[in-house]
Image (cartoon, rainbow over all chains, first blue to last red; front, side, top):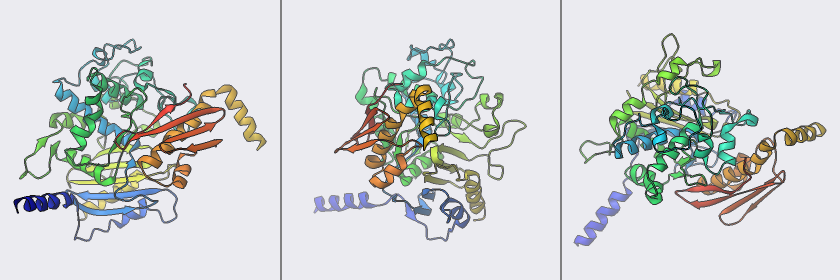
Length: 359
Length: 92
């Protein structure tokens, strides 16, 4: 009898879904028209909007569904930031740690000054060309991802063109150098390194569909190669909104998975962003520690002028987008394969914000 | 057609790196699309295609082999947690 009770309790606990459907009428019609363009101009594969554990909107297309993992592309960088924060805490280190202490092979003449924080801020000063299909001929990122067996080593061979901390320059190379640093902190315990994301981040959240690919040298490709379903990514978003504590309910025994001070720092505008004369396309960029932000530099505009400055964002190639709305405790995710670059993040995020504020 | 061939000849003489990327890019992204994202082979072929087409694509149980411009690349599916990895490709 006791055994059967335990069994039925355990089956009940396993089958209880994390997310529940909303009984309220959230149409999100404006965002839907923007995300799922009826003329098929761009390819949105899924949109998920949740408030806490309640699904407000969910739709899939092009063969994707709620179970299938989707590539995050550069949204992986924000997951990498979480891992770096967790590892720093494990080792009782600060982001001011010079990476040369663990990665002695840097070519840069500033190698002893480049810190974990500089890499998190995309401000190492290392020379880098971040182009994809539009200009593959001079692309360091393409060479790193497809022709290099050791991505960290490839980035470490780059020379400096600015002093660390003085120039913001978005670079997938900086993330993979960070992930090489992350690997080196495990010395030769490759198993502990390989299992770290699953054990420390995904398992506590009961995320079972996450994949994180490595390069041929065994370094996690933190710039680009994580995959998960929208519902799993939404859990990551909720963890961040909950200041790194899990589970979400205070009535349950919570663990502090990510240091709240590290997270707070992650959402401060990197000083180098405001010091850098950015090109027109990037002129209103707002970036923290591997998270995009909506905070304005003095004399400049917020990237999303009609949306709260508190939102936190992750972007990926082909229009992958994650938006956290802290005031509403809402996570919005858009996955796609928008090769033509026609999907408008500005319109989509502005529409969601407007609809949330009309609640 | 002639213009495309001329452009490719020019590319191969000035930018051999870009030609090496074609097979590696296709193999890696096709592998991840098929085995990690669990999409159909038709969808994945369309997803992985680039502005230059490939010469051949072979699929065995966990391995994708792609040939383009005399360069060959292989991507292997390692596990659900580790996904795909380029196991053989031209170096830069």
